[in-house]
Image 1 (tube, rainbow, N blue to C red):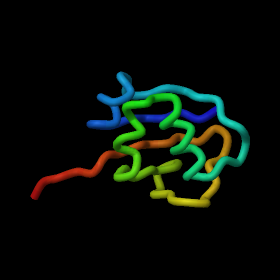
Image 2 (image 1 turned 135 degrees about the vertical axis):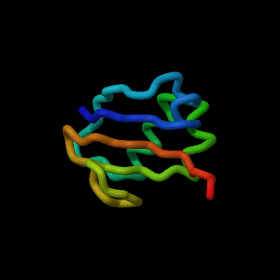
Image 3 (image 1 turned 45 degrees about the vertical axis):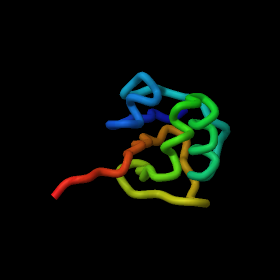
Image 4 (image 1 turned 30 degrees about the vertical axis):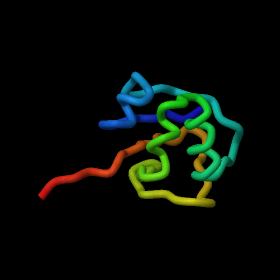
Length: 80
């Protein structure tokens, strides 16, 4: 199980700011993103430009997401 937090446009795409989901053990970041895209079809459109944090640290590609992790899905931010 992992706790997923959504922010900004990702929260709009999922209709929630957080959810707990059950995942197979030792999925990679890419596999988790693919799974989230399947759970929320509107989210799939923005996942390619999102940053994923696992337990407070930016994570990418083939890094493993451990069971019990907190996953934050952040859309790109603009500002100055």
